[in-house]
Structure formats: C-alpha cells, structure tokens
Image 1 (spheres, rainbow, N blue to C red):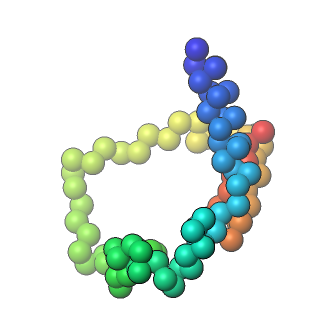
Image 2: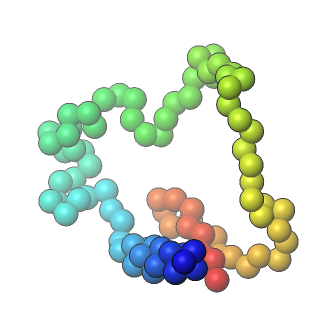
Length: 91
C-alpha cells in the first residue's frame, strides 16, 4: 500500500512540475496590481521575509531536526535554479 501511495504521489508531483509558474495568475493580474484584488498583498512586509535577529527568541520547546537519509552517499540527483526556487530532480 505504501508503494502505491508513493507512486501515485510521484505521478501527481510530476504533473505539477510540468506546469509553468508565473507571478501573473490565470486572471492576467500583474504582480504590481495584486493589492487591488488582494489587499493583504499590498503591505510593506512582503516576501522575502525580513528576519529581525534582535526580535528572535530561542524556544527550548522546539525539538531538534531529525534528518532521514541525509548522510547517505551516492544519491544521484539534479539541482537546478529555475529562476524562482531550487528544483531538485530525483531519479
């Protein structure tokens, strides 16, 4: 069952990866005009997020990250900067 779920997930991930990404939505609304339709996009604190180090506080309730197979050597993959993000393709 886990294999079937994995295969179906990879199938849909592959389909999604084929689509082109753009700041212009299907409605043709350019990025500069987003606040007209989506007021929350018109603020001054938009992405990228400005992390103010003086306002960041450590929380001892946070658990450490547990990386699975991170140390595995010999994994073949392709990493590409597609202009919007880093895209990693696994065999």
